[in-house]
Length: 250
Picture 1: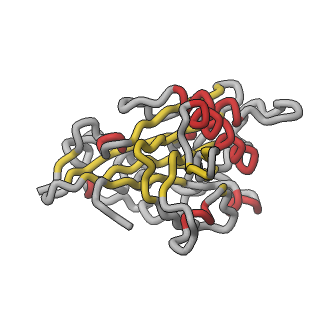
Picture 2: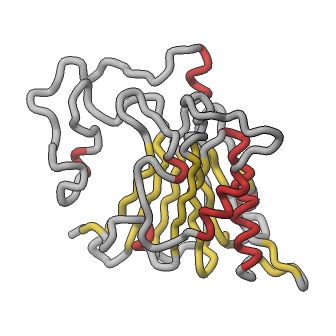
């Protein structure tokens, strides 16, 4: 029988710590997942306008077998610089892939589009994401905030505010699976105009408020809801995630 992890966070998977940093004026931020020891990693890149850094390293035929951290960031392509800040923090910690006398922290990253959320993006010559990445890496803990924090600070959906979410499940065989998601979806997380989440069938211990599924099913449930209706809508919405487990994987 499955149950929630002790914290119901991705950090219920041993060896993971998570840190957030954000700039409220900017309406954006960074989330860093530090892995100690380095974690075996793979990637799947979906969508029409993805933004990633160092994900090619994760192909099974390449030299690198494990990562020191994974970064989720706002800021669109500017946010990829957050990985440089996390890398700097890890280098100060003496972490990284050994290459002769040198250590190179391995930090893949993915970004979401939050440039059009009303925050002040007039940051001058250099975007602030490198500094936010460093702050996030230095703030890691097994307990961390969710909602409008870190990479979820400026995230939006069609109906409710988007944000950062996390959960964990312990399977009947004792294996733990955890997830960390920055939800910046074009659509809605809830059914029609109700407060009932589409994910209600997967709820454990009333973690979504115990509302269950709507009864009766609303007539507008299938009506499409989109965050933006401009032509560029398909390029301005991204949901990015980290899924972790303590199962032994190659």
